[in-house]
Image 1 (cartoon, rainbow, N blue to C red):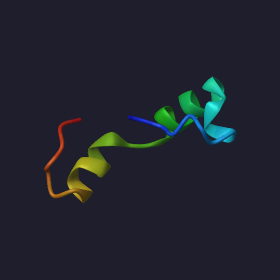
Image 2 (cartoon, rainbow, N blue to C red):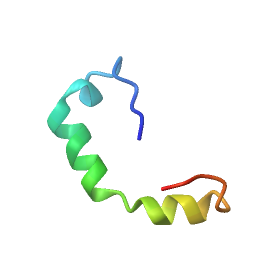
Image 3 (cartoon, rainbow, N blue to C red):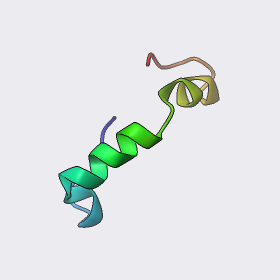
Image 4 (cartoon, rainbow, N blue to C red):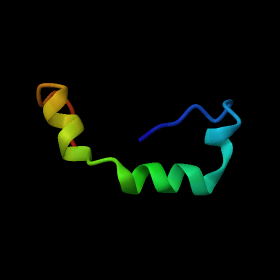
Length: 38
């Protein structure tokens, strides 16, 4: 996953780690019609 580190909230490493743990990557791949790889 990539984040815009220019945004103050996303510049915090702990916030980015929490988002990575909370987001189900397989759901994102299915949402994008399997165009991406998990």
